[in-house]
Image 1 (cartoon, rainbow, N blue to C red):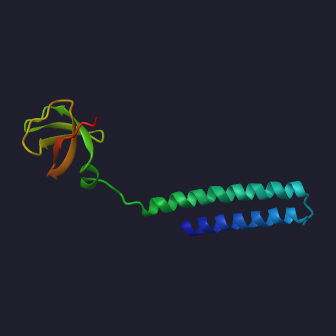
Image 2 (tube, rainbow, N blue to C red):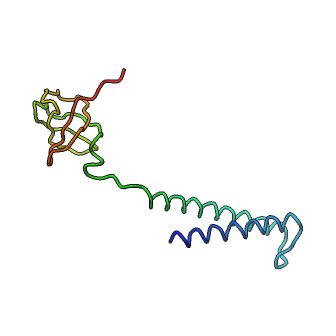
Image 3 (cartoon, rainbow, N blue to C red):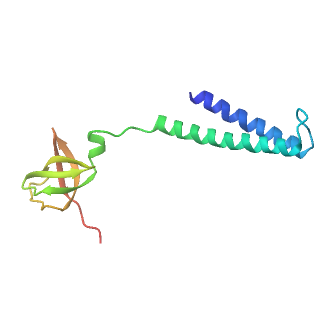
Amino acid sequence: MHGWLAFVTALFAVVGAIFVFGAFYGVSYFGLGEQVIIALAVALLVAAGIAAWLLYIALRAQYTRVKTGREALIGAFGVVTTEIKPKGEVRVNGEFWQAAAAKGAAISNGQTVRVVGMEGMFLVVEAAEEKA
């Protein structure tokens, strides 16, 4: 898929460039007028730009590392929904999780926490430092 997209991008860019240089030097292709050749060249170069952008998006998606599960949770911030003393509930990434305080300290409802670990299906959290 990526190879074909790269090929089409290069083909459109080369043909568009040939049409631009041909129009600049007064070469007529298939008896077409200069304005028609320039319009075709612009259309081909725009299509090449769109194809290059799609190729970039596809390659970036191909090589981006997927973060799910433990990797996505550790380091994430959340909000305490029920007081944690030493266990309670937090909302992290839009999901409700059972949580335990990292140092056994109580964390009040509504406070921002950071996930520092995971024990089974429990998140281990600590109170996030307030930014001034």
